[in-house]
Length: 151
Image (cartoon, rainbow, N blue to C red; front, top):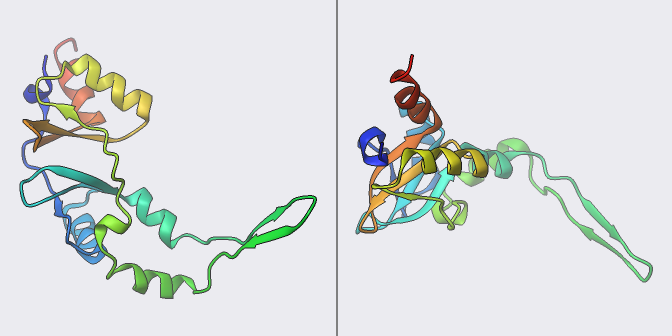
């Protein structure tokens, strides 16, 4: 079985010039937790997930680096939680998106798709054909399609 046989071809995505506000609106409207980021040619240039958002809005403690010769302090948050929520909205998606995207080809074997999802511990894989986004496969898609045949 190939990726193209089980991929979802209705892919929610965001353009590389979008703001985080647009990402959050898509997360809320479509009840999703991640989006491929594409350029004007529909090529995958990034991936933004709810985990990326959590890292930004979560509390950042001061880090103290103590060596024999001196002590360095990396300052945590200067702004409160509500301020971080407001400030994130107008950021460009590419400031926060992962730029090294794990993706697969549309003709990849599902066995390999399962291996990548498991090994990389990711929820979804964008699917491309000739360098262009054509679908997405989730862990649930793999489970449903592979076990449906034998149960």
